[in-house]
Length: 310
Image 1: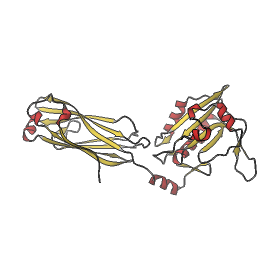
Image 2: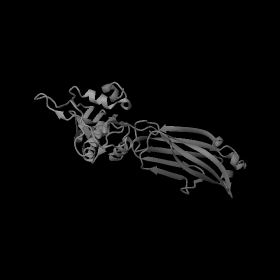
Image 3: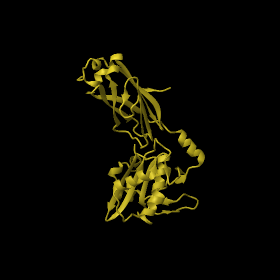
Image 4: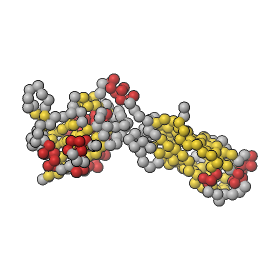
């Protein structure tokens, strides 16, 4: 159940301006998962100094809901926490949801996911509501600091908590395989074109860097001109479509006469994932016999994919 459903009984995208107004007819306290900001102050200043900090803290804690445009907090009873109650203090500046999400994603590292925003409008006044999931890739950093929720506030995390957050880091589950695409004859050489496809199968865990090394027991990789190929990327790798690397293996015809068994090994992993290997054994006898019209994946005699390296 989402935070919006727990607090308002409805999904974030179904919230209305009046829902928020009704909610604050009773005194409301901030908590580990609730933060209120009034619409007072400069939009940009509040966004940079308060909104981003709170979202970063939610990511590093248990997630939460941030309402921007809430009533100003007041003290109802001495010795008791401040509460927000009464008329809303909405904003008068209109910002698109996508613009805000892009600002958040580019301001917090590593790039967060699981953040949703809604803009609620009434009579030219606006509320902004942010729903943040607890991050599976924490800790996240904003403006050089790791923030967490403590006593209903967003505060810089002490060193021992930052250490604990790093120890909680889960691993992205990567899968990698070779797809052999095309066989062709070039003068005295035989060439097999292939794609290395790699997926991040972890929906909420981002791989921060990616390393793939390929090795062949016969021929050479056209890109590296030797039997080893290194493919490295340092851009964040999310759940979804695969990253693909195109290359080809070149075999000298004389080598095919001497041996028709080729083994290809892939070793892959990253900063935030366990190292794995995939391996393929190819029977190249059809190529030695001059059969270049064969579906290239039929050359695979044996394969073993996505095995953890001890």
